[in-house]
Length: 382
Image 1 (cartoon, rainbow, N blue to C red):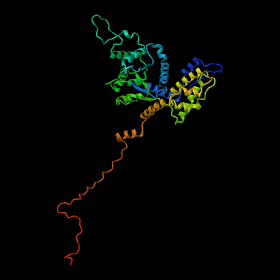
Image 2: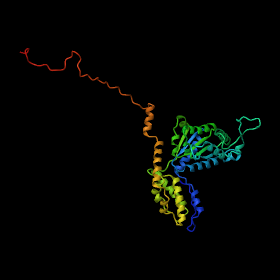
Image 3: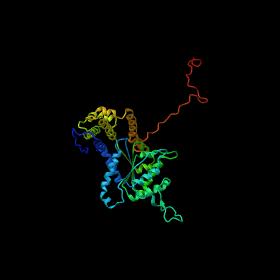
Image 4: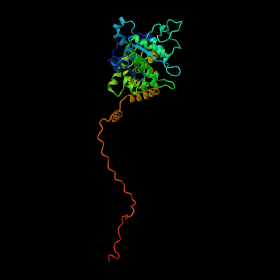
């Protein structure tokens, strides 16, 4: 299940910075990561050009690891073509920056995109749409702080068309949701959709569950987009529990210690503070190993894990966000029933309306006697 290359260990070899760095660079392949990777690869290959793909999951689940693996895979697949076409870039990865103030900075995004696209001499690009002055023989598209955003966008679109990447990967895409007053989320996503339509290149928006508000902004975007969820491990699922223990065992084998702690026996504590996210688990183990190395101990102990464990309050807050997002993404029976009801599917014949008998007024009409027994006996009976 895991592609593991064991590290040769000896009891006399000290724990050095290099060996800690070796553990930090180690990436474990596990079932949920492999499933997400194959879904994303197939979506990029099979989806129509210009499709928007949303890759979302909890923070620390391993989304960036999937993107890096995807970049290596696509580069390897295009290796033969890249040998003869030096202008092409196999895939583009742009890390979206959170704005220092105000809303998401599109000018910063376009500038960084040109850098990632390795656009040479961007400040000397010819602007064919700019009218020439009498003293100019050619107009250049200068890239500087005062360059209009629309011109930067045009430069990015031309660079994408020239470089022909298989996909544009937008990491930390939840930063698109940071908007100023008067702007809507739909406006933000429409920019990405328009660029994808113009260049006919699939865009992958990778981020946390903060991307949820982008998923169903309107019917057109829903139809033109795909959703891939990178799920965490759930302990109530026996297969998930077994896979999480296997991941812990793999990490244990890679630790730069002669005497290794049995992480599998500590799996409940490790799951409790990571919520089943392998990325958080790896980072926690790295911090614990650094602490053990400073203490010059022969192995990683439970005390080291406890000292570097994420706090319970922090985990509880993250768990609430995850559970809410998982509930939002799942199709419930009520959603299906509501859809079928709106489509008028499977409805039974409506029952005939019951006949309502009008209630009779208690007041008699004029000339109508009240119901009353007549008095018996008297003169006529004698």
